[in-house]
Length: 542
Image (cartoon, rainbow, N blue to C red; front, side, top):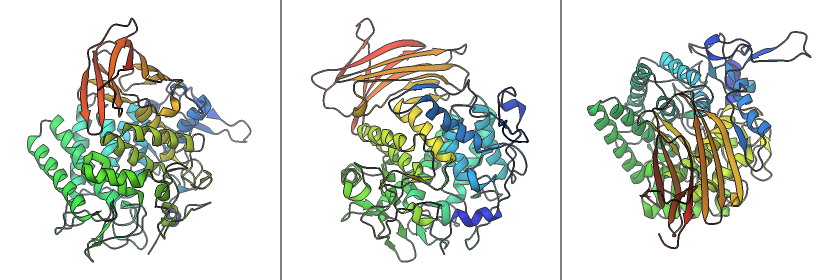
């Protein structure tokens, strides 16, 4: 049985989005529609004027950028009914109503943490509150999907939750959320979802995309297994931070074992791609879905397989790399379909472009050190979704379809710009702010900037980048009263030539040269130097 979210919204009571909590917003900043008889007041939790950074970027206006935050704010649910969720959250948007969905809210965390850390931490508290006794976190608030067995969701909560926790000063929350994520991970590895023979994790409905499986323990999908492996990675990192050595060893071992299972059962060497594995029939599926590239993440795929996958990724025959990319299913597959209009379930995931899929590939490309390809896809993705924060995009003409004001598209647009292109990372666990821009070749000769980005400690970061042929200039300024973070400035490179690093006065700076698979990272440790101008200049040889 195939089912779409359209059927599920029949079960969702549409809620009012008109009130909020005083601890989360400035009550003087509200939006009012004077043309309506009853004034509509919308609390500015995510899109206050003082939390949206100023951006200078080719093809993106400040109004475009602001509107991504506006979309998130429109999707914020602050009042009852909240379906067991005890804190405000980000709903999918539009006709999906005011119900929480694990995937949509978890993905949105990657952007809300750059506008309101407290709100993001409270969304995590909400997830802790709805967790079931067996550790499962439901798909959504109603927790009943007609025609499907009891299910969860593609578990992006591991990565989204970790990104919020590593920015948090609340040690109690880190511990409580760790226990929640650990129990959730244990649920995936229980007999409910894990196949003992292969070690793979099986999924139903929206535990994978396309969401087509309605049988328990029948199919192990690539995207689901990679997300669970990432869950092992994130939980083990949290265990290490909390000094829980036995947990660190346990989840690190589970990560290694699951990676091995993915490589043993999902890889088809003759096709040079990863496929879902049918547990019952003991064979791989034949549908070439773009989650075939998900094993780039965490370096799951060995080097000899990476090269085959890169050839498929960058060949226009399959995923439209040179055009509007990337198609969610290969153009050569018999299931390929370009949906227009309303979301229609699996067909919309069988060709159309989604930020959910592109962002996963971007992250994977960075994990294998292919920053050049990651930069290319990052720019292509933000250009496609800029001022077009739709549910999905039709590849043949770039038009937007599905929900027109869709939360996770807006969130991942913000995330890709801030973290993958401008390259900003804030980590309280090691007290490091990393500035690692990754500008595509298309921005050569351009200057871009992101000013007054709100950091979770209340400080502000302004970043100015100029890319020229053979050089990258990185100027930054961090203002505010908190000074317990160290700064690293990094240039990732896939070029054969090397780089020297100088300051504004032309003085050579010390740097580390770090090899990361296909890339070389040139890293300057700047300590508590909160203002600097660092220049990376190409030299003749690496």
